[in-house]
Amino acid sequence: MAAGGGAAAAGFAGGGEELRRRGLSVRRTAAGLDLDALNGMFSRVGFPRREPARLRMALEHTQALVWLADGASRPVAFARATGDGVFNAVVWDVVVEPDWQGVGLGKAVVERIVADLRRTGVCNIALYAEPKVVGFYRPLGFATDPDGIRGMVYVRRRDSSPPPLFSSSSSG
Image 1 (cartoon, helix red, strand yellow):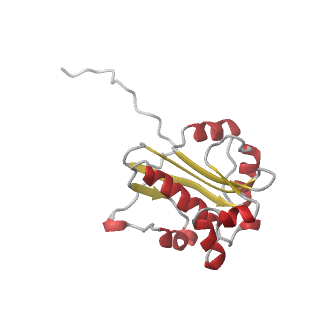
Image 2 (tube, one colour; image 1 turned 60 degrees about the vertical axis):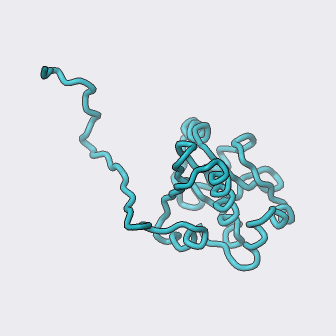
């Protein structure tokens, strides 16, 4: 995702007048979100396409969602977050349609999703970012390795299968 900035981006952060002027509307539910169009946007920015049924399920389990729709109700920017609804959330899938990159739409969706999470009391907000876009998130309040904290990701080994819930031998 290209970082937006400058004067064009400034109008998107506030009440949304600049968004409306450009014919965009802010949406906060998955109602009316065309999953094929979202998957197309994912693909155009280099994200993997998702199976529609699984994507729908992910959206149903999403705590916060912000997407910008053009005049034809197609998504042009998108971000979602999952979490416990109290302390922690992770922002996922921040994407901006390539033709709309560089004008502040990424900033607009990230600022709105962070504000929505903060309004519910969530204070620990994390996200995953490719190295080439880490700099985009810094001015929005995100830091890499704050206080020396390192993120870790479980990577399942190819030959591993889930351990049995109970062993066949019992110790007493």
